[in-house]
Length: 84
Image (cartoon, rainbow, N blue to C red; front, side, top):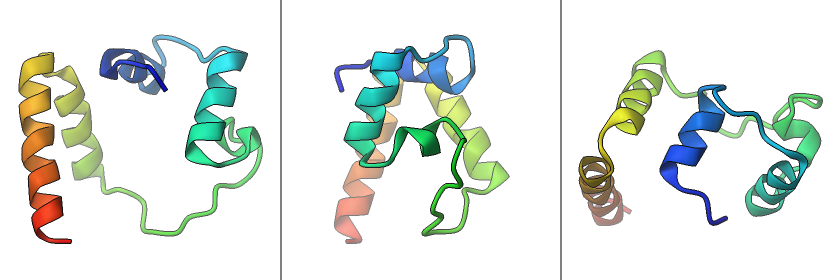
């Protein structure tokens, strides 16, 4: 989508609100109706929601400097590929 991790983090934390164009881009990229992104329609849960522990760790990860965040994500990607 051409967004940096920092930009996404500002949306996730509510520091910045999504404009119409960004909502449309998210909906197209994620292949879900914009209503679901906006909370106007129930999301289709296919898996269990993330645990509070995982959510906190993801928030901590988003706060790391970009170089460290990339290193952590590379390790995660490698582990996921190795176990797929």
